[in-house]
Structures are given as structure tokens and as C-alpha cells.
Image (cartoon, rainbow, N blue to C red):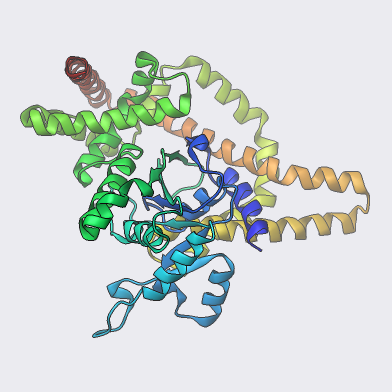
Length: 449
């Protein structure tokens, strides 16, 4: 069951995400004993993403509260999940007892197994690394201590960063870091077990932070997000940090976050002035029902021409794709909302229900087609046309929205000329502020290095 689900998950991820950027695959140990420790921004989408890139079977340490139903517990165990309990997972007055779980983990690592754990303990849609629990370090050190530090346990840190964790066709960055050799903590552990657990946890935290994009709070994250939309593509064109587009994309965003932190700490007045200027610009965009991408694309004549040609010629394919793909596409978002109101579960629930709805509808549509036209090759061509037309339909809809926003911008440019002129002036002034801040920040980094 695990192997089959892994194959299905790999295909589903390729469909759900527009792009999956993966770094550090060569860092993954080919065999255990291994503890994979990752940040946890997107509930059970995170373990699915990690599992498909590891050749070996993985066992997951999962929130104990989801094992309360015996049927669900049986199914989860078939998926290699092991319950670990927190204080809020047990009744009032009860003590948390994970001794059985820890013993099972020790035994599993002694058998050269691979365990996946999320040391933050909870999952939130935010670009912040929450305080790490000590369970990862305790399991790793406890397993080594039970075998006189001869197991060779390693901890593989994995950083996960989503561009938009809630929505279909967003992007995700998966970074496999250099593994931590737990045996190197042997002497420290023999001297002071508790201090060594804390030291190993801190080592893990630093490595996760290095391989994720972290912001200090919601306001900080919002500013980073707004600067990305305004300035990121220009930075990518100018800086040429890496030949690898995936790595460059990640490093640019991480650099923006670090620059924001630098100015917030060292030049708070300048930080506040830039933040206020950008927020006023964003507020004006929202007031006019415009988007930064629309303004950027208005200067790209080739984009406007190709968009128009595609919208005209692609309309029949759009209708075809809409007829056969609308229901299986729209149902997952509805079902995900019925199952859970928690937004952190939205994307994985949509992906899983999407596998079911698209598979079910496609089988029914292919069967119906074959009943009407019982010929092999026409049926095969029809079957292939379903997912292809579905993606074309999706892309067509995005271009149609883009075209409408472009038309709205040109209409507003005539009806509200003063406001649009003010908007574009504010935009130019922001670029000047960001360019000055960039040059100063890069100069500071160069001087420090």
C-alpha cells in the first residue's frame, strides 16, 4: 500500500504544484538509521513532499490526537505513522506518556530505519520557524545511547518553503541540508544528557533556519511579500546569484527577508518609512482593484499580443476542457471546506480529494465514451485529451483574468487619470527607495565579509 500511495503522491504533487524546487538531493543518506527533521508549514502536505524524494521507506511521527478512531488508527499505521502525544492530546489530569513511542523509535533506528519528525510540534501557514521541541534530539541521542553510540544515527534537516501553501499551482522549495552526525555528541552526552539534548536541538534549529525563509512576525512577513511582488524579478535579473534558477529564486527571497530584518534592527526609522510607503501603495492598488503584476505586464507588448491570440484561438479547447474537468476541479475545494475549517489542512485535503474526484470522473467519462464509440484508439485519444484540456482550460482562465485586469487598468487610466498617475509616481518612488536600500545593504554585507 505504501509503495502504491507513494507513486500516486508523486504524480499528484506534480499536478498540484506549478513547480517543485528541490535542493540537496545528494545530501540524503542512502540508508539508515536516519531521522528526517523538517519545519512544518503545511500539515500533511509536508510529509508527502518529503517522502516522495527519499528512496527508502519512511515512518512518520504524527500527532497522537488523530489516532483516537480505531479505524483511522489502523489506516494510519498502514501508512507507516507512529503516534506521539502532546499535553493537549490527553485528557485533563492525565500525564503525557510517550515512553512506548520512544522505545519503538529506538528499536526502529537500531534496525536501520528512517523516521520523519516535525520538531516544531504544530503546523502553521507562516514563514517563521517556531521553537523546536526536544523530542528529535532525545530520540536520536537515546537510540545511540542504547547501543553505546555505535548505531551511526544521523539527523537530516529539511527546509520547506511554500509560495502560497493554500492554493493550487503554487510553488514549493524543498531543501535537504547536510546531515548531523549524532555520534559526534557522544562525549557531551556522557557528561550532561540534558545540556546535550539542548545543544543538538539548537544545532538542528540553526540548520533549519538556514534552509528556510523566516520572518519575525506577520507585519515583517507582509512587507517581505510586498517587496517580492514589486522588486523580486528585477533583483533576479540584476544580481545573477546562481546559475540554478531554483536556488536563485530561494536565495533572493531569503535575502529580502534578511535585508528587512537588518533595516528593522539597525535603521528602524528608515524601515518604518519604507514599510509605510509600500503599504500606502498596496492600499491604493486594492482601492482601485488592481494588482502589481497587471501594471508590470502592461509594459510588455509581446505578452499582450500572445495573450490575445491564445484567448481567441484557444476558446474551443477551453470549452472542451471546462465541460469535462469543471466538476472534478471544483469539488475538492468544496469538500476540503466541509471536512475542516482549518486553513492549514486546505491544500493537502484538496490534493487528496482531487486524486479521487479526477480519477472517478475520468473513469466514468472514458467508460461512457467507449460505450458510444467502442473503438480503441479514439478512446485512448479521448482519455489523453482529458488532463491536457484541463490544464489548457486552467491556463486559459488565468489569461482571461489577466486580460480583464489589463482592460480594467486601461479603463481606469482614462476615467481616473489623476489617481493612476499618482499610483505610478508612488511606484517609481518606491523603486528608488528600494534601490538605495539594496545598494547600502549589499555594501554592508560585502564590508562584513
